[in-house]
Amino acid sequence: MHRTYNDILKYILAIILSLIYSLFIIRFFLFPDDTTFSLVNAITHSKEVLLLVIIVAISFFILSIVTSYTTILRGKFKEEQEISKSLRKKNEIKTKFLAFAAHNLRTPATALRWSLNDFLKNEYVKLTKNQQGSIQSLYSISLTMINIIEDFLDISRLELQKFEISLKAISLGRLKEAIEHTIEEFTPISKEKKISIESTFDIKEELLVYIDLIQISRITENLIENAVNYSHSGSAVHVQLKNDKEFVSLSIKDAGIGIPKTEHPMIFGEFFRSSNAKKHKSTGSGIGLYIARKLIEAHDGTIFFTSEEGAGSTFTFKIPMTAEGKREVLNTFKRI
Image (cartoon, rainbow, N blue to C red; front, top):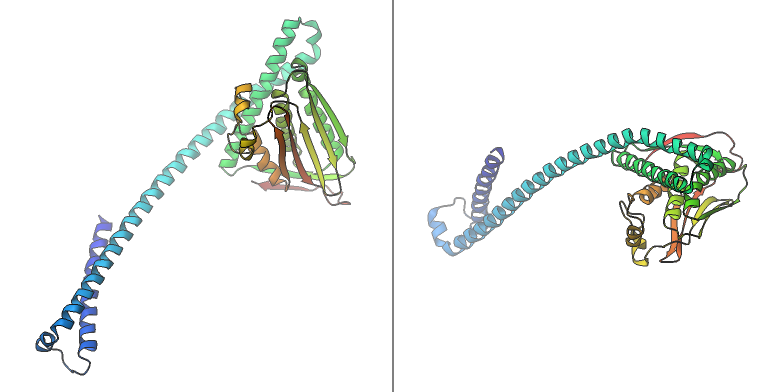
């Protein structure tokens, strides 16, 4: 209602301004030498006055259209703002619920994972082949489940802008140990699928790299899991860590199903899974690589891949080395 009154006042103001404008034009342009303006003079110059009235009428008409159009646009803009605000609120509620659910699922899933891992290490040889296969499958499922839960936690933090990484100067030796531990975790699964995981470390262990070791370990875990899941039985997964003066790089190469060339530009997109990956393995969140890209970019690094459908893929990420001689332990938080 308030907006309607404002629009009426605008039209009245437009009419008054148009009349003043008309009188001003008539008085000072049609009768510049007359000291007074009379009806007789106006009739004498009726054609000019009529032309002026037409011009003013057209001007007023155009002004009315412009005013109406801006009013409509303003109304639509306000309506869109209200819809956008409502959607943002709903999305925030959804994201918070997702984070709450994932957080509460993580604890029992982690407990299950470590229990199965301990059982595989200590009781595996006592089991029959069928039991061994069942326990290995359960362990594989628990790893996948935890990774999906962690992915959903990460995506909710990203959407709520509450994702922080803790960057420290870590030696390449410690990074190597973390990667070896990740490879060890996937040994039961790779054995079940008859896939070997081979590793090469071409590094100077005393050198430093500025990373969040927990997040880099998670990225490594995600890439190795993908490589194992999408590899063919009897093939090998190669993990290579190397460094030069500028970068440390980690590559995970497999000889699995590969990625269709037409889908290469979308592979790091949110919730994207390649068409042949969906056929090969039905489960998967499709956000692991998206989060990996976000995290590597937060480390001022790059992540990329080469792949050929049916011939396998190689995923590589590179992170800048810490300046030589900078031995102090650095610690900073970075929000992404």
